[in-house]
Length: 287
Image 1 (cartoon, rainbow, N blue to C red):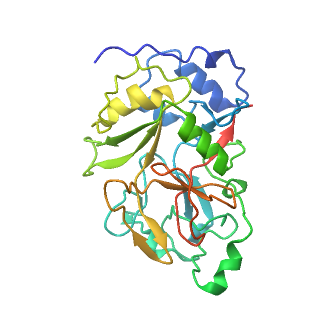
Image 2 (image 1 turned 30 degrees about the vertical axis):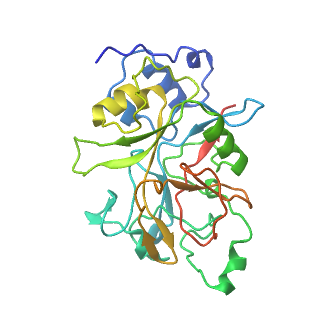
């Protein structure tokens, strides 16, 4: 495949305030590798416009995860990481497969699906009629200390921001990604391409299904700010529900809005019972 011409010169005009941003700036000057990308932490650096005023955000390096036994929040190490249940997922703790269905306030594994607005009580899974009132007030997940979140201010996108990003962003592609260099059958998901994306980075055909190696993902996509949001389950009470196939990607993420509170990357905003457990992908505002 042809050598990538890096298109991040415009970003280099910014004065980066944090040590991480300085590292990103340094890496962007040369050809990026899997190792150099893995050294970056916290946020990706591809900007996404979220409203008509031109405000932009960066996405976190991966989905949000929580460990109840230590009261610890973190971002997934890789964008394609997800917990799932006992049958799939690729997140382990002490060589034990993590499982969202085991969510409790003492669970020593990691979870990555949460009831709406449960930033203050992430293991709450109540789904009876009496529990509904406990979801009325939104508590931002990004207000918590995230161990690999550095010093960025994290938040969830609003419903309107999700809508603008997904419906107005012409760079969005729905792509099947198979990471052939790891012990997985294949991970499906959605790739979001940032404002700075240039089609010369990688020629995407009209066919939405492509296969990528990990090295190609880092070289042609993540090194240019692309975001990968994996397909996974949603939780109802303590029961995990798998995606049903075509038309039901399972890429459902909470927004911070009371109405149209979640966004499916395939169906763009619907109302859902707030006791469902969905994934959370945080952003930080570009200042």
